[in-house]
Amino acid sequence: MRFLCVVGTRPEAIKLAPVILELSRHAQVVTLCSGQHTDLAREPLTEFGIEPDDEIVIPNECRTLAALTGAMLAPLECAIERHNPDVAIAQGDTTTVLVTALAAFYLHKPFAHVEAGLRTGNLRAPFPEEFNRIAAGRIADWHFCPTERAMANLRAEGVDPAHMVLTGNTGIDALRLILERRILEGRPPEPARGGGLRQILLTAHRRENQGPPLVSICEAVLRLIDAYGDIEFRIPVHPSPAVRETVERLLGGRDRIVLLPPLGYSRLVSEMARAALIVTDSGGIQEEAPFLKKPVLVMRDVTERPEVVELGVAKLVGTDADKLVGAVGELLDDPAVYARMATGGSPYGDGYAAQRIAAAFGLGRGGSS
Figure (cartoon, helix red, strand yellow):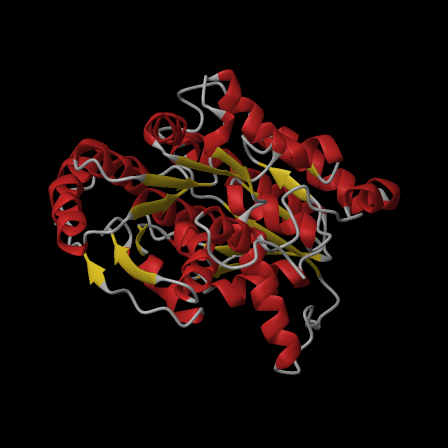
């Protein structure tokens, strides 16, 4: 078989890397960068030893959603025709996923959706991701679902269960591979950092959190730094101008606030492992942090990953400064609350989702041994 795996963003690269590696053991795989965030997507692929085979170049001026979608569709259609895969594969809910599904549909090529079935029930939260994954799910021939709830969401939309596979989340596969590599290299999975400060890792990048919500997040950080002399915020700053300019203006040059460039995946795993707690709007980090036994405060009002909230290892706190300060303060002040959220346990599988995806195509063994 020949597969075309389309990668557009950094999270997609992280979560598709285990799939690319596993499928490559049994079949021919072409890896294509869609041009959505090329530099950010290439870096994690390189960490996993994957070199893209093809690339779409998107003009810099094509940065609205409509322009990006239009600029990507025709070249992606040409790439599918050129490589002639048996199956096109995309992961998640970005514009890349939507366009890959559309191009495959127009060319009558089977499409497989990795991380299928996530839903909030609100088309505008997250925007535009909720629409993207619903549309991709309507087209998909294979739905690789991370959880039973994701499968239930698809059944409620009328998807034939015969086209669904419960795999677990490939993000846990990626995390497992990185942690195993650190152990093999003789590096501890949780390296210590001196100074006696409690580290708080904060990441914010979602489109709906730009503007006033991001200002509110920064206000909360400043208030917490003033209230607690033993904490340090470590903030990887997303390259989006709407994020970077606000964060640098409000938080740059402050004591105990460390603004970091976008991190490689291994470095991000190290930062998560060092952190006392994590504050984020990232979907992937909601999945990874509980595996590392780190409490997660989610700066959103809804999440398509309710399993971690129900387990008590993550909490929805939104972006209101008062609520953020209160939620972080509770974890810093109350050891019992912290201990309950740091119990660990992941509802997203055992780290062998990629093997189950390969097995769905009749390849490999399909699970951990």
